[in-house]
Length: 356
Picture (tube, helix red, strand yellow):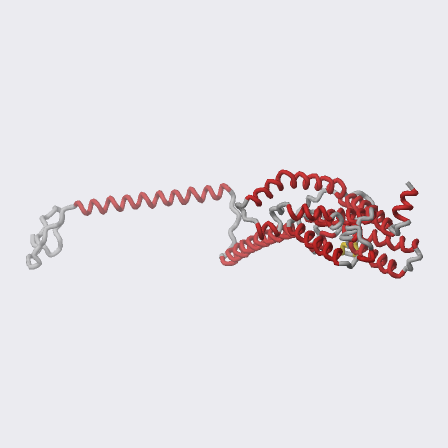
């Protein structure tokens, strides 16, 4: 094992790349373990803060990448140990940065949301590419055609490079990210990816495929039967390593909080308007109403009912008297020039001045 390591890694000059690869994977695993413990509210594991500012680990990753990159450029090639140390520091910083790749991409804290899976995808791509480089597979290299490194700018190699790049771009436009990236190391995959139909949501599908065409229908069938089970398996592996990405996206959470705040303000304003109206009514009345007991309110109700009954009876009596007056026969008319008739005596003493 040691002899194979010396032959494949040390003698080929890939020791710094090996240090980068190991440091990258170890740092990523430790970082994910740490953040999962923080999410589980385990004691002694807390976010790094400066006052009210949450310092993400991408900040430390950028610092480590800068230090490792500058050190690798400043260290002479003869000092393999220092070059290895610089590669290790650079690998640690790269793992911290790519672990929050989704945060850089969306400029939002989407670490535990569905968008946060982009960080795990970026880490997997980096691991795959570095592993292929450790195996001695070079992207678009002359070794694929068996050319001499001195003839790396020959017309054959330039044509091979242009064709491979064109096939890689076509494969990526068809929505096959992994096929396009790994195809840079294995050109046969680029040919397969460029020939097969594009994924339904890819740019090539939107530009070239009609919704009713046979190609689009075939792409949809392959997406359901092949692609989705692979995606579910990939998500299971990602969540097994990096944890569940099931939180609400920050933008949706912010919109929900804003809607809740607006509703609270409307309720508060409504309560204040009602209180102000109640205060105005009390201020406009000459005196505040005293609190009355139930017996007082009942006695007042009885008095009001008796008054209504009395008024109703009086109204009926007045109506009956008016109807009797209407039914009485009218009095006979009398001539104004005729002397009034004398009333017969009713007995008793005669009036004064009346002849007897």
